[in-house]
Image 1 (cartoon, helix red, strand yellow):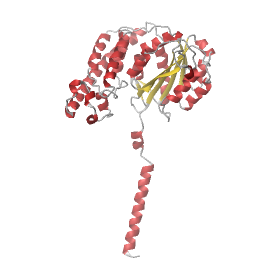
Image 2: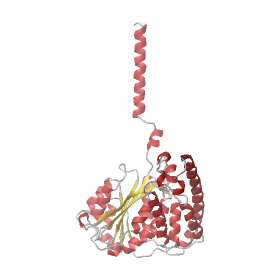
Image 3: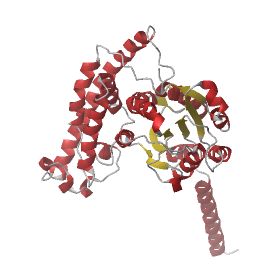
Image 4: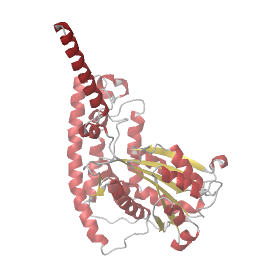
Amino acid sequence: MTLLKKITKHSKTIACLSITAFMVNCSHPTKAEVNDTKAAQKINIALLLDTSNSMDGLIEQAKTQLWSMVNELAKAKTADNQKPTVQIALYEYGNSRLSADNGYIRMVSPLTDDLDNVSEALFGLKTSGGDEYCGQVIASSTTQLSWDALGEDLQIIFIAGNEPFTQGRIDYKEACQKANNKKIIINTIFCGDYSEGINTNWKAGADLTGGKYMNIEQNLKTVYLDTPFDDSIAVFNDRLNNTYIYYGQQGYTKKEMQQKQDQNSKSYGKGNEVNRVISKSKHVYKNSSWDLVDAVKDKSVTLTKVDKTTLPSELQKLTDAQLETVIKTKEKEREEIKYKIELLSKKREAYLAEKRKTSASGASMLDNVMISAIRHQAKAKGMIFEN
């Protein structure tokens, strides 16, 4: 074999080996690469609330307990010690104001981490007599919402009402099975006597997906226990709000919504107001879609591409460098405020834990039964909750 042929053959061998190695590496990413690309786990919760005439108490509980539920959800951690994003969707059903063609059902809010939007939606609910089709609203939420196709997230439907689970043209068994196929757990909450809920198939609906059947007294009023830390926490709300910089076409409107939800929570008393302030200090309260501080932090916007005419007037003439400095200052201030709220909130929680030992537990209230179910079902996804 000539020298030229030997060199050519050797070169081809090296090339083949290089291509083979490249294909192997492309086909089989390392464990580290898989972990880097894997999406963070979420907690996805859909609330399906009966808004017929008899359900005013249920809606009131949902309004007054949203932020206490959010604060409990914020305690969740994944198996790799990450904090999952929380997304909440809201449906109403059984309301005669809604279209009969759609089964008296309406998606009020899709799965979203915009918790102010969820609060706004809750406060907009009005009850009116109608027919309650549990199977149909389960089917609608199963198909319409953006659930995790792989089933890696904790995916839960809570349906609450007080009429037989069997009503409507869609069989609840079929609807629950389709939800189960998507790895969605259905927890049923009967608003009334525990045995009556069993007799009207509410427990049967939960059993089909390995969910939990519960009952509540929907007309109980939420009772808040005062603590010595409430006033100190509430004071931080305005300071926290001042760290938000609205941007974009909806920015100013969303900032106003934030303040409106502050007032909505405050209208139910100091305890509910404080629960919301604590929620706003948690990682689950995110506003990247309209707040520049959050948006820059999670890299969802490029500062140079922000339309400065949508910013607060005092910031519109700043250079990009000056605006970046303002954002960093606001971010630092917000983190300091959050830290102070966290310290006070831990003292408040310990105080409340002692107080609850000698007071009514409220075990049959909406937030308590929901959190109990979530904590139990999160274990199957490798999640744990901080105490």
